[in-house]
Length: 269
Image 1: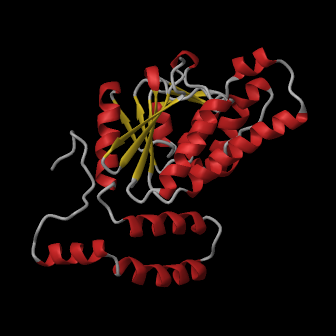
Image 2: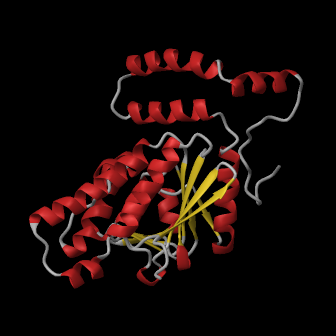
């Protein structure tokens, strides 16, 4: 029996999704992409899941679409290509609209759609040996899984042009410097850091987290007045939650907070 293309593990309120095609550098074939779509759908509907952590097996994150598999299957009809893009579109929608934090822990190779997944994540932690590239133009394709939308908004239009048109490789420090990655870590520290952040976020208010994610998405295409209206609607809802009541009680009693961002090891306490 072949191994499952996607490994699913629960750690309290955190679900860890591990792309599990290591011999193909976790390239997205139909089975893996569908498994990822299904898992994200399940995470969305389960209130006990607070955070999703994405990573890859075998020392790589994701080499993008399964180009070797495409070549082995031979020519595809326009209808088959359309169906494949519909699945990629569903993956992008599931990641973009998930109302819980998504963290990508990126080691080794992240090419093509692997970078697109990073761009759809709320937090990206990369190892110092990570290698990334929007390789689509190398094989005559265009960026997919939402990268045309996300990259200009994260890195700016000029850097987006450069990375897409050149299809060149970029490394961990550049990914951090242009805003794609939050932190660069030693390979052995990557998953422990990503997991401790995920566990921390899982203790935050799910109500406030969900509304902030929705509002930040809306802010990319809204004007100031609309965002102030959304703020006026959302704050009373957040303030009425059990989490907020307990947080206020703890603050007044000078007790430790429920949620606190975990500092890195080399940061002062």
